[in-house]
Image (cartoon, rainbow, N blue to C red; front, side):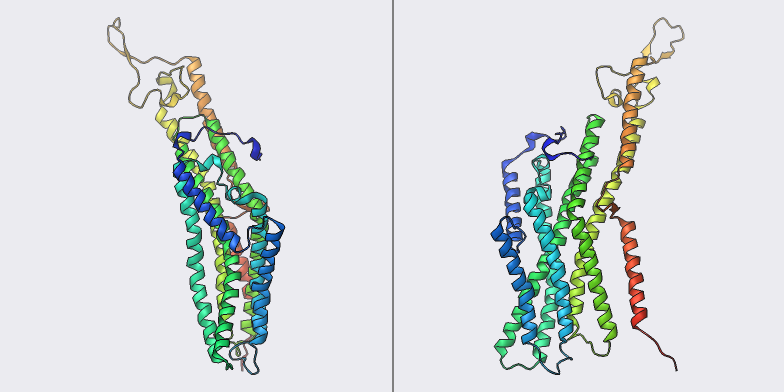
Length: 432
């Protein structure tokens, strides 16, 4: 069920008194710093000039510069240290995945803006606990990017230094300039690619905050319809995330798969020629691309699992409320309250002692038909709520395919089958 953004129902699950200007200022500062980082690498294409400058920088630094360096640094009889065809294939693969990331992310940011794109809206953003979680997740974006990018950068640096040191050059300063130019171009393209993956991970993790908080909302004494409306809001957000990232995820998966098959074909067909020096970029490029797609799949599977787990949370809540409320035929119910389950705690049933009863037998009043009907009405509301949750698991989807552990297992075995097929066509064994 879709909810127009301008007509979203405000559910009374949040206390507005928890708003603190200092927390909002800190969150705004985190978002401002985050947006500056995206603007630095060309994702914030809010105008024609920023759009043109972003793509011009990408074409010059990410594509033209490494192509010129490959041509300049080429030498005869240097196949032991570098192979031009290998370098060009790696450049094409890195440029394509980076271009997809830049295109898809910049389109969404231009259309929605950073705050709406991250779903850090005023409804959820003005709670103290969510302020802290939002800032923690945004800082986690930079940590995740650094953790995976730094080791790959060190590998790339070691490979470039080894290659340049092995190839004879007229000037040492020229070799240093070539290494620095290669590293700048590589860093620029791969930061763009991994930023797209980490940004998708950030969007999913921000929604995980609210999915984890949903269990706490069930402890609040409110009407069942409010829980349903809050779940509709959450599933609506997950549907938006799926819609905004489906092309990005699909293209990245296809491009990374194609890139890995190129690597597999080159390394198996040229097994006698390739070594760690001339084929080291294959290793670095493969690691970066696999890390990027794994980050996306892990984030999507995580949020899908949390969304599907809400059904078991509500089922457990329904069972606990029903069992703790006792038998409606043996308890008094207050007609002035809607929360009949907590009208009389367990072990405190009202018992009237009749003075005219000679045997002094305890008497428990039987609830009226109105009281029993009201109790059963609440029970059926909770039962309908549980049925609704079980029928609407939610999660991240790509054109209807929910990204969960089952789909990831399917992707893994399909990729494994294709790898074995390629190996069967390229590797042969002869017997004498």
